[in-house]
Image (tube, rainbow, N blue to C red; front, side):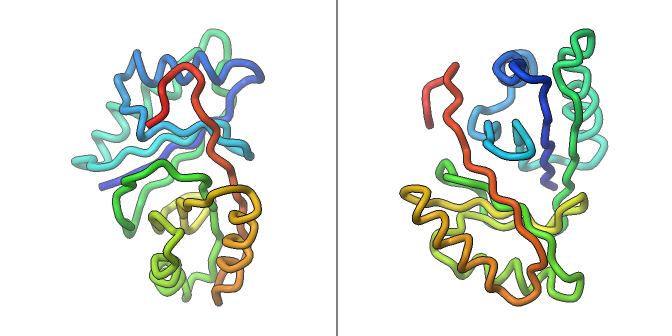
Length: 171
């Protein structure tokens, strides 16, 4: 089982939240992404045993990070229905897609045919598919997003570029 949590942080608190995720909860830095977009931090939880493990080990403790200071103002939980390949390299961006229900699996399969797509997961939550992509620069990302948006069945997309986490070495 796999899941994601998107965290929206109080302005100026994302570095402290990241420290608590990595050092307090001992999350692997390769599963924590600082984003430029509507979600500040995206955390991936691969290889979960079950939903109970996600809830008890991650969901409940994460939503309590900085509770006294309201460091996390909102969380978005995304439970994976159909998994794409495991991330083997750091993505340049994540693309969050909403898809016509009848096209969900077809869109996910079509995404995985694109060489720049690292992974594509169908999820329960406010989005239907989370797609991680590689690109050399913003112009290449723009071309890739335009290509992805042409896939039949995609209704909306939101792209978030991954930022380096300055408190840690890059992977």
